[in-house]
Length: 331
Image (cartoon, rainbow, N blue to C red; front, side):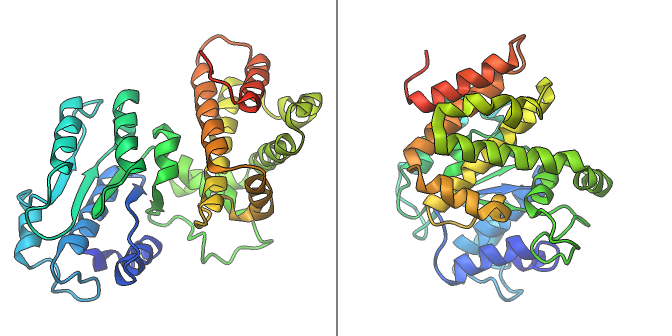
């Protein structure tokens, strides 16, 4: 049950346990893990703790009641689990989910739905789920899981409480006692990209990665302060750091994660990645509202999708800044 994760996933476990104990459970969660099956297993344990009549997270007897057994057998009507088949999650399953959520609970007063590998939703399906999350019904809780958060629609990520399950033997960012007060944002980003401890160590140890991360944050802060005047400094602040398609894609990922934390700041939620850059996040949040940030996130993700094509990268960046500043709809 959920308590089985207390030692192996202490941060995730305590986030969920405290929410249940304090009755502050959010309407939507996004669990990330290197292995999506592990994230989905954690999600099922969370669902049991929500739906079990004892609401028990402290003792070992939870998991033995009839509801928990029925959940194990996929035979409890208040829990809906959707999993992908091959490359995509079927549209019919989402239509069925919509119908199910329109009905009143048959047992208890909560309904929970889990979508495993939410990154496998196509654009239309992702927007359908976004509507569920943006306009939550009382006592309906969404739990989404993924192993590739960068493929999840940014607006979905922004509406969920993000809970990361750490990879075994990876650095515990919150409790690690590392020399020179390292850039914890770089460590957290490395954990999103790296599959093995050795890869993470190399990522953190590469000085250029820290420089590029600093460059992205500094560029965003400058753009937010001066708008399109930042184009006068774009060579020094951007193109000197990012030349190839892969570097641009990485930089856009960092922008997405940064603006996501700006949304967290606006919503008075805990920063997920950029607490090391708290002053920059606060500064950008003070210059925007949530609608502006979501608009900018949409433009960044569209620009990132264009990188795969044979396109002039400098012109792409110029156009992105103009679109972000104009707030006009792009055809």
